[in-house]
Length: 460
Image (cartoon, rainbow, N blue to C red; front, side):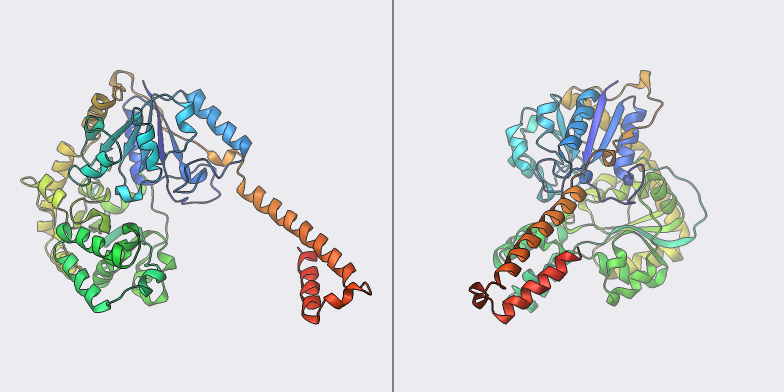
C-alpha cells in the first residue's frame, strides 16, 4: 500500500463548505488510486497559492507549518502533480518521485524551472502521445522518464430517462485582452487566417500562433480566445434543446442571452454529477480548447463515451486514430457541422444507440485506469496496484481552510495600518495649516483635500 499525494489547481466551486469540492476528473483519479489499495490525499493548491506562484503564498507562517507537518507525517511514496502544480517547499520536505501529469498544454505549466532543477526527481506522464512530445523533452525530462498512458474514466453507464436533448458541462473561456485587440493591424486578414485555421485545425494553429505572437507582441497563451469556437458551437445548437452546466456562464454579456437562458446553475462538478448528466442526455457535446490543435481531446470525451449518452465532439485526430475499427465518433470542424450532427442524431436514435454501444465497449477495453497504473508503476518503481490489500476507505481531501490563511488578516492589518498612518499625517497637517507662519503654504485646494481625507479615514 503506497501513500499518494495529488496536487492540482482548481477553482473553488462551493465556498464556505466544511469539505472542499473537487471536479470529476481529479475525483475519479483519486478514487481509482484509492480503490487500487493506496492511501490518497488530494490538495487543491488554489487554497495555498495562486496558479503561477512558485511557493505557498496564501497561508501565514503558522498555516505553512501545519501544512508541511501534515505532508511530512503522511510520508508520501509519490506526488502526482497536474500541470506541474508544485510549490518550492515540497522539494525539501519529501524525497519521493514527482510525477507530472498533463491536464493542459505545456503553455499552462507554471514553475518549469523546477523540472530541470530537480530532473532526477521528476517523471512525466502524458495521456496524449504525439501531442507535445518534443515540448516535454525541452523542459529537461529525458525520454526514459516519460510515460505514455491512455485517457481513462470512472464514469459508468446507467440507462436513465433522457430528459435533456443536448448537454454541455464546462466553463466559459477567457475573453480576448483589449490591448491585443487594439494591436490588430488588419482585421480582414486576421478573419481570413482564422477561417484557414478552422479549415485544418491540426496544421494551422501553430502557423496562426507563430504569426500573431510576433505581430501582436504577445504570448501564445493569450491568443487562444481568437481561436475559441465554444460560444459559437453552443449557440448553433441552442434551439435544439441545449442545457449548459458549469461555471462563469452567468458572467456572459447580455448579448449572449441565448446561452444564458440555456444555463442551469445547479452545481455539476463531481463524478456522480457528471455521470448523471451524461446518462440523462440524448447528446453530450464536447467542444475542444484551441490548445488541442485538432489533435487531442478533453477528458470529458471518455466520460461521455462510458455513459448512455451520445458523444458529439470537436474533430480530434488522436481520438479518430485511437477508436478506428471500434467506433466512428461523430466529429465536427465548424458550428454548422455540429448542428447538422446533432439534428441527425436526434432524428435517428437507432444510429445514436449503435455508436453509444460501441463507445461503451471501447471504454471497457481501452478506457479504464488499471493498465495506466501498471505503466506508471513500471516507469517510477512505485507500487500502485495493491489488489491484495484493497483500501476500503475513499481518498482524503486535505482541508486547507482549517489552516491559518493570511489574506483576510493581511487585508485587515493593512487597512488598520493605512488608517493609522493617514490619521497621523492628517493630524500633523491640520496643526501646521493653522500655524501663523506655515498657513501660507496650504492653498484652498490642499486644505480641501486634507479635510476630505480626515472625514474618509475617521469613518473607516
